[in-house]
Every structure is written in C-alpha cells, then in structure tokens.
Length: 264
Figure 1 (cartoon, helix red, strand yellow):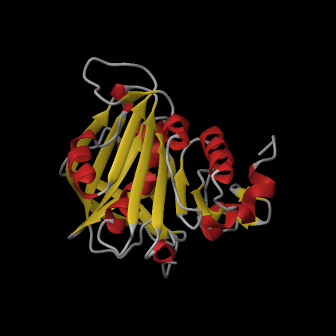
Figure 2 (cartoon, helix red, strand yellow):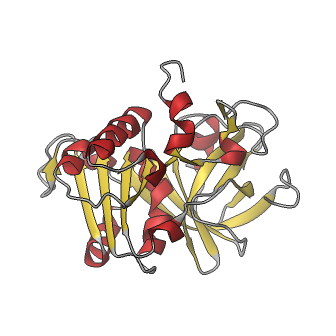
Figure 3 (cartoon, rainbow, N blue to C red):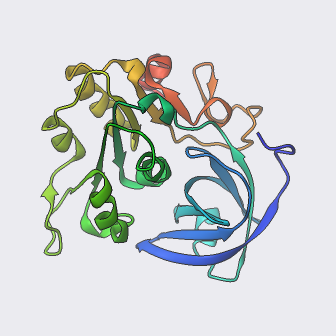
C-alpha cells in the first residue's frame, strides 16, 4: 500500500503502442516500485479515474494497456508520447508465483485479460518453473494483444493463442480457449493463474476440476468497478472481500461462493 493512497503522481509517456482498434499500451517513465498483479488508478482531470492493471515493468518505466470504453479511458487513449499521465498507486496484491516453483504453471488469459497476466508470465520465464504454459483466447485476429511478442514468448515457454473466427493472416487454431484447455495434459499439482471475462473463468475452472486441479490451486484476477482503491467505498465488494484491497487476485476456493452466484 502506498503511503498516501490518494496522492497523484505525474509521469511522462515515453512510448505508445497501438495494440488494436481502441486499445493502446502506454510506457510511462517512473522509478516507482510495483509488483506483478497490482494496478494503478489512471486519472483524467474533469473526467475521473479508472483502475488499470500494470501490464509490464521495465528499467525506469511501467506499462499500462488501456481500452477506450468510457470518458476516462477514451481521454487516456488520446494521449501520446511526451504527454503527462496522472495516476495514483500501486494498489492490490500480487500473483503467488513462488508457489509454482518446481511445478507446472498454467496461465489462462482471455481478451484484455492478457494485460493482467503478461507481467507475471514474463517473470515466470525467469523463475525455476518446471513447465510454463500460457493459453490465450481472443474473439478475432484484430483484437489480439501484443502480437509482436508471440515469437519471443513461444521461444521461452509453451505459448498458444486461439481466435474465435478465421483470418487469412492467422496460422493458429480457431475456436475458444476451452478448446485449447481440453486438449492439454497437466499435472494435478499444477498452479493456475487466470484472468478474463467471468463466463470464461467459470468454464475454465470447471474444466480444470475435471482434470483434477483443486480450486485452491487456482488463482483468478477479478475485474470489478473500483473507485477508492483502499476498501472504503464498497463499490467493488464480492462477498466479504474488497477487490481493490483484498485482491484483485483471489484464490478461487475463497471466492467461489460469491463469484458463481448469478447476480454477481
């Protein structure tokens, strides 16, 4: 937790990458410490702020991948190199990567959920993981994130992507992420990190249980409407937990009761 959770910081944007239509990655210059799985609140004066996962970290910069869906994110996506980006954070917990040491780590990412798993995937490549697998599903070719990284990732780990509809430039499989998961052989003591739309998470968890993976071996990063980021406003509550403070990453067995309710 930051010392003053409401203090705004200003960072210069040093690089902007257009990932796909309406989605941009921003490299912001900062020496701020952060951990994989955490997020920042990105601020737009006169508009508000939005919680955005830290997608990656490099020497002297953080990366945020932002999809334009509202006033705040549309404004942020209009910024370019040299502009200032205002933010506060970082907030939340991190992925329990150490639990996967000496074992198989399976990462499942759907759509923009790849932005929440990219950094921990990059870190896992450097750690003593016995077997590293990353399955990624996107609705179509034009929505794929980080296409320029796939070759590097595939050279260091078992990275597989699938899209919902065929495309002349796509040489991989067509379908949904559960198609990839069904054909995967995985040890029962494997650790699983997952982030994506709620229906995808629930479908994947069901398949993982069929493969013998217990719910306490599965961690999910949840996306909820976060406002204060310190657990006081109650906007992001799921059962007794605040996603902003207790999460955004939860062991699945601890949230199953609330996550699988129809009204949640």
